[in-house]
Length: 430
Image (tube, rainbow, N blue to C red; front, side, top):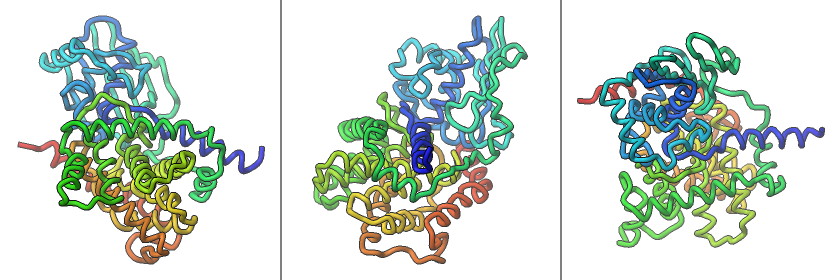
């Protein structure tokens, strides 16, 4: 097998792993999924449900709405998973949740049968659900990614072990064997038939955006941009159009809309942020070439996956920055930019908004999505004039690979203390 063919297979596998359809914020849904997996092995009436989760999972599931339920919180998330009990649906398991399911989950919580504790393990993404009935005790453990069931234990006997608990890096960071240039070559020249997932990402995420702009969801960031453009308080331009489209989708998603999105690297907002700004620019410029849109979105989403693989699954830094950098790459290619200009746009984005913190999943995430969308477009337009942040200024290096590595260091080695303080602020509310 030729080297290029091997590389393309690896990139395709990364795309399939990174782009996953999800309904609702992925952290509470992953909790629900763990609960559903454990329940599928437990016979009898539930006496107790114990959820043990890493601080990053707690942070991102603390207040965000659970789709189709009007509920929020870790207790409700795990209770819904236990009640709904369809683990085969993975991150879509709460699609069309019934009123009876919602009431049953609420009863479990109200009766004090659900306990949540913080994990002291080093994994950033760790979810452990133990269900006790009068017959069985079953534990399901998810580590590293939102649907990676690492171990299932029933009545003190291990019945499933993926052998990855000891192999997963403590920082939840993966090694990749291809370069950013490889991604560029794949996105711009691979058979378009290989990009069905990208087409689906465009369709799903556009529909959620339309819904977010129709109704009054969350902070209504997208809808307010639309109204302010109509009122002439904001300009009717490409940047604001892209911000409106991306923020509208995030508004709906964070408010718990029962519509699926194509997530990227475990985050629906990253999928939104990597796809919709590119779609918006394509629409605004009336490019019309569908294949060009798909390839631009492929470059954006694959760039996001690439950075995220180095960065790690969860952090004290906001993932919208990563998808913003990916979007800058895709937008620059749409505008006719060279590989050098595309890398400059990526670097301009990271050099601008790398310091945005992740203080949990919530309605105001739509503001961060809109901010990073604006940063992506500004970064791209600078790059198209061969303007970029100079190497040696802040975290920016000569090579985009080195800048990405610096950003990853901030997200891994640099954010532990910040994460702990953010979690304290989130959980210690009056």
